[in-house]
Figure 1 (cartoon, protein in one colour):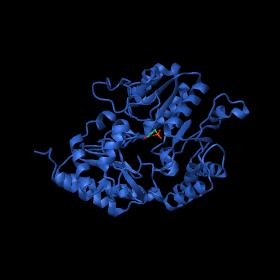
Figure 2 (tube, rainbow, N blue to C red; figure 1 turned 135 degrees about the vertical axis):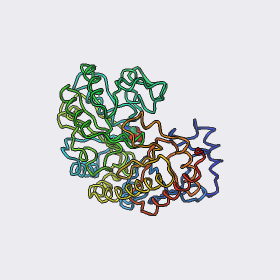
Figure 3 (spheres, rainbow, N blue to C red; figure 1 turned 180 degrees about the horizontal axis):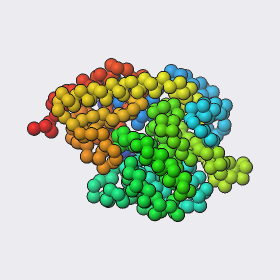
Figure 4 (cartoon, rainbow, N blue to C red; figure 1 turned 90 degrees about the vertical axis):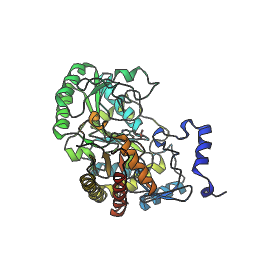
Length: 438
Ligand SMILES: Cc1ncc(COP(=O)(O)O)c(C=O)c1O
């Protein structure tokens, strides 16, 4: 039986019988069923019925150069025919780190992991070792993966998040260990309140983890003075500052948010675009901190993982990084994102609807708000029903937007003006037919 004869409804029923929720990551759930992709290329996905969709999710923004980028695919195919999977070091892994060093300002030492969650767990282990402290602080609303001590205050609801200047630490999931309750949460872009909280807990804090732009709740940039203030404060208090650049990494600039803002943290995590969709992540950081993982030289912190530096994943990274290093994909993505933002400004004016797109580097978030949000509390006020009407209207034109109101969209370098304009046309139709307007 050819794959194209399978109906997505049937596949979903089969999956539901064996897989909780029917998907292998909860955020992929869509109504009435997830997109069952059969093939992908450039900005497009073909589903199991052969329908071509324009992808505005791009693998949670990981596939920055576009699906099946020829150079990446060729490198991965070579690694596969060479039989390289895991368990050895490769010349390709060395090349990938060498290219990374040319891109990132103040590069120290780096080491590969598989997922962003794992990279952040490694970074926290280093921070605990060098400070002798235990606890972690993070910004309200930020997502840093699903490790217990970081999956806190993510997509919290008004009844769980506490007062704005002393946010609570609601767990992002049930079943987390006590480490989750120990996590300190501070309000993003509010330096006086953040400083008060960090000073109060300084003696216990190993690390502050920060996404320089909050992207898992749309697109909320740190104000430059906030980032600079946090850098100075953590240095003064002896707390390790970790930038989570899983999403900002390589999209804002080849050197990521660190280059964009001119602020250097102690440790940084990368992933996603690093392998253009193949599973690879990294921790980079100050040589004296990273050195604690050099067990060959007596470092006490272990760094292990069967799939670390996987043959196909490092091949993907070694092929993607030189292209990312040129800055051309970023310039193209900035142009496209600006076109989308400008288009939404025009649509908001014509339809008299409070909507805007925030974004940069191909990350984009339609917010149904009168002004761009500065923090999670402002972002969560977006009009969910209006966003879902936009998603459903776009789906009728085979344009695939993220299915949840604050799950940021993403363009890849293979998108063109044509795909952006198709999305703008769908938005025009959605706003003209918005059922929530009286
Ligand atoms: C900012 C950020 N940090 C960490 C993670 C976790 O990465 P992974 O899903 O590879 O574990 C994500 C994933 O969406 C992310 O967006």
